[in-house]
Length: 178
Length: 178
Image (cartoon, rainbow over all chains, first blue to last red):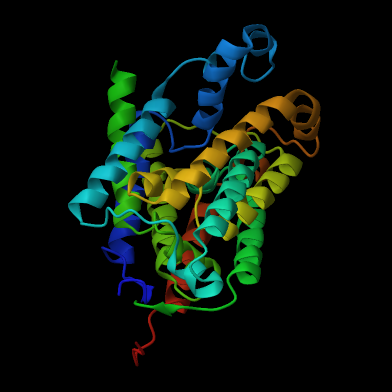
């Protein structure tokens, strides 16, 4: 039943955008602009420190203090997971799902292929985010909030390649409830 | 201590907002990248505009905490492209991937596992690949107003105009089909 089309968003776009924007302003006022992806490297660095302590200590990136302690950014990511979990529960959108409407509409019910694509996509997402010094949060949203020069090349390739890839991968358009 | 609380509060609000906004919904992201469902795009436009204007206000009040990323243009172009491909394949980015995994999406959880591998490879290739690339077309930590010697308003006002133009162009058409 619910698999027929893309369902409506819980709240209107203008309200959603204002809330997200105000969270950004709160972050800038209290600590520093939003960012998510650095902490994946911090988590890996913590594990590497146990497996290969010497390699980690001498590494030009993860040997530094920023990647060896759980700071504001770490707790932001922990909070993000908890906040998303609670919000999804509260609005009754917490649901075990293995695939998406767009995927099913183009590739049928092949869950394994969706998961494999997800894994490879995740690999590219974080590798790319670190090459770019930030992701959609830290480089795009926060970059523009600060008028950072770095946001310009990032925006061009992120959305350029994002739109091209989506166009090539998701050819068939499902019903979208707007 | 206060770092932990600030991080948890800001992150918690951000995670909840991503779910409410349906940015933590890969179907909405793919819909926007395919230019078929503008909900996510309009949300992001408002998010960025409120972020820019709010940060500007905070700066006037002397309350803004900036964190400008270095404009390592070559590295950022490559990173944006890789992230864009992963974004277009999956409909996730680092923040929304975590939020989606927390809302019961197994495909997002697998994507997050791929992200940890991406971060690991980034660490491993950092000394030999990333560090040399960072020096190609590197302009340092600078902003658009700084590097061009122009006032902030000369950037913010046109960006706001472009944002409103994007919202106008993607407005819902009157005779609602669906």
